Image 1 (cartoon, one colour):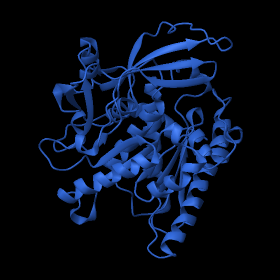
Image 2: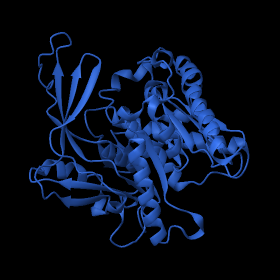
Image 3: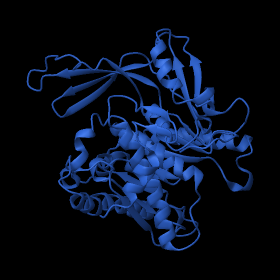
Length: 393
């Protein structure tokens, strides 16, 4: 449960706020079947990331820019205000001068999903996250973009850090990078590796990871729902960990060619998200040291699969929870097992944040329960976390 805090935000996202609409097409004829009664829903990768972080952080510790158009509905404002107690500053509101709030349509045709903007999108830059009361960015910044755009963002972050106080002591802004699906192509792997040398967390889902590495997606498929927890553990080990090791091998190879074996950069945390199978992480304490690996199952199992309504935003919310943990806890300098538990703490919080995000269309329900503090969809995040991390397999 979040606790009150003061000071600048510790987590910020450059993801966008989008009002999602839906369109279902006949898988054979392509004719419209309408929106399935869904209407519209608040969304966007940035919004889900921020709400995923909010599960574990006070609203004043989070920052996200929201551009309101002339059509911004009062009920949207009410929904978002529920996450920002006493207007603590979680949302950085801006009024669009060029018309409507950003909207998009999610088009479904059989198993295929496409995404199209219905209004012009406003691209955010790192300077948009700078607080009016501080020259510094949030300690952690999340971005969802292609590798080339990520390099532009990192250049601007470095420039802002150089002007502020963040560089004192050699501690610059940390970055969690989530590649967009369309950019996860074999021809972009070299640029991906260049970005990895400059970020702190690199997290594709299993399909994006397979595409970057030219691995047949059929070889790393994740059944949903899983038949058992044992099946999930097998998929994490055989598929997700294999992909993480693949990135590590390519990173080491590319870094050695550039540095000639000296002053090699440290590999970022490689977090592979595998939906119903859970997630895994590969962590390198220091360049050249053996990697430490950890994995955690998804919160929902085959027994609770009916609670899963819509997986939209689950991955973004996962990274919000994971980044919240990393913003609060530095990696331990003790034993390998201590480090592995630290990693499991990050993955577990990501999994719990994702579990709330996928139990309904749009955003989860945050309430204040007497004697319990905050609950999400009627349950305690901490209780879910303890249950998850104590599971066998």
